[in-house]
Image (cartoon, rainbow, N blue to C red):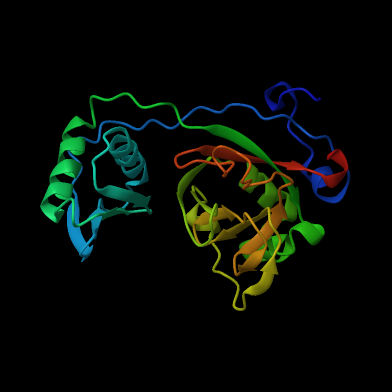
Length: 255
């Protein structure tokens, strides 16, 4: 077992991309503050007889995570599913047990309490990535489109902290916010019929990790050896909503 990354010098990115390197250990990074969201504005939109959208507006991912946690900690009989996205939450409920007005009232109650409840610190994780080559076929072309060297793009990808905004597309597919808009690239013109599990990719101002083999059109920078989903785990996903994620370059020879 090697030393914690915080005890090591800055990794040699060129070596990590093209040659065997050392595996490093998971470490902790500071959690982003959630703040007091008591006065956040919301809009309620009926989706169907048993579903309600709660829109919180742009730039509100931390507020959404806080509200989701409060809803989880304040269970309401008849409220069945809570599904967040970047700017809204979908609440699915049993219309035989609850009315839309009752669901709205429960959300407003949670909003009034949002500044007075302490929430657990988000999960912190560092994820190894094999960048480039067969593991990251879009690394070189993406760097070229952005006017960067391959090492510069890897360094940019590794120096940021990402937040698991929500899960979608596939079971366990985590949408990670935090990739800067100045480095955003569109999805591929033609999606690949098969993207290997563990592929780490970017699209627009977001990053993602493919949990299983699947079709996909995001630009693949590398692949992690970690198993993103495992049905033998109590929580089958390696990640959780609100988790703080950082990537670091590694190499298959280290695993």
